[in-house]
Image (tube, rainbow, N blue to C red; front, side, top):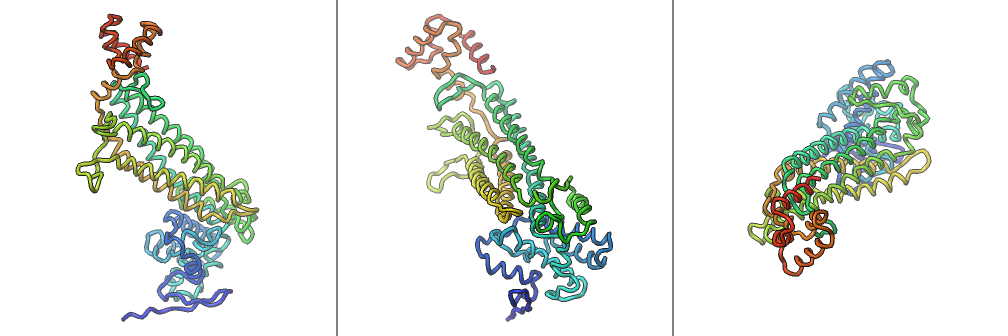
Length: 461
């Protein structure tokens, strides 16, 4: 039977036994023991961005001959191993961890240091010649690395969200064109209202999402400004002058993003409202998604005892007990994702306002709430577009029947036959159950052709 072997590592708190094959070290081991909370690992995009900071720093130090080029090359290769997914199992820190993200940051520093030393022919845990703090983390601090990495990760995922929102709004516009001549009853207060076209209804959905998209794009802009090189408090202590002047340029090249140095490195650590601004814009978008999903679920309700105005694609059985039942499953999923995002928006807001003095220590939950919201929402929108919106089929006859039967359709004829006369017709329709069009025709007030023309014109305008 295989017997697990351990190595002994020491920090200023004492000794710990670390699995011999582990690339993480004593700081990570303490974090594992201290924070067995959710079992959720930190987001891959956050890890990727932290590693890119380490690689960019190593490239800059190599170019300036600040560290031995062999050490820098080993750090870069170790970082690239993490980016390739080879060492993912060794990033072990829980999402809920020590403030500011120190635990995750040190976990990555230790993995890079141990892998770099291994590449240089040294054993894990020796931390010679590459040390997690003195080499991998040189000129850096958790306090500038983590906020910078968060911004990079959030920019990337928000770009993906923006792309999916554009695609969804295009789908609504296509459906609007397809449905432009389909008459239906409008509804206000959940009651009959004047006729509209299904196309105008779908166009309104698309435009609403496009307006939300512009808010998200505006909120995203400030995330490109980063405070890397501010180190512990924004002063840049222990960071060489060449590092402070050049690291953003190196990181921009590594990430392929148009990153810029923050005007105040102090402000970039203290103030995390850029994340709450983005989440606030996303919240508005989610509120519209929920509203639109509610409309679509109501329009598709039935089919025999609901509105049955549209048919959604049938994607799965809707019941474990009622044979043949079909539910609006995709829209239900989308709504639940939106509920999650709304909760995370509140979480991020609370965390953003809770910073003190030179640092907001609640960065890990800001990162987790924002990144998971972006990921889940992006995936949910893509699925909704492909498996629901693109496949909606209108039930033309049902909608036409509702429009004609609606008492509110009388409003269309009021300018032609007068308010008082129209009110009498509505009263008669309520009393007899006849539809208003038949009553008007019976009284000889308008021809059928005139009635249809007025109804269609009102739906278009």
